[in-house]
Length: 263
Image (cartoon, rainbow, N blue to C red):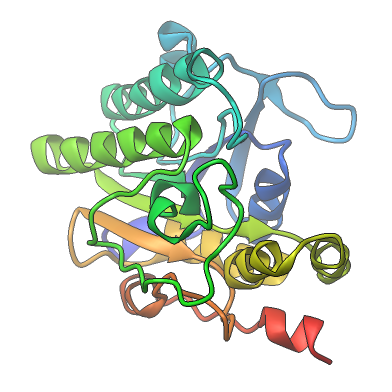
């Protein structure tokens, strides 16, 4: 993206705007012209309804936009295949194809830590757990999905890589961690066993860092057409590498789950 394209006069379309990450994205991009889309109407947000599995509707929704932040999906790691197929598979294809048809410059695709989490879970049926000495995961390591949800995010990342290499679309595949307030993090960890708390500590993304992450994903100059980056806070207990996110997106996380839980 050129220097001009990074200016805040760009129009950013946000799908899944009513979700928790979507609301932080709206705050992060307050200086941009944003167009908000959600699956249903919400009294507290000026959103347009969009069914992301409807290709024609998606194409119409992106008319005049410059950047798409695609957050809409079924986010449940316990969802079965039929529950993720339309919103996460068809929706991801529609997002990239609609972006291409409308001549957008960049797509920020909300991937997930669940795309690379299987090798570190305690057992396959407990995906939100982490073994005591987890393997370090870097963005260019092979995918390791822990659920159908994780599989759908691997698919979306692959679609992003395809559209970047075949069509020159700028793509940021953002493996987002677990967005929680400090109070929510403390409450979650109080209810979990050791491996569950280990996961929460590693994957925490604070609201402030979430805003920093999404703003960086939209505004950063990219050294290549497709960038895959981990999106968590600066947690001492992390095992997802942040080096590539810091270097590739100029993301500067400031919060640490240990500072919240060990104070």
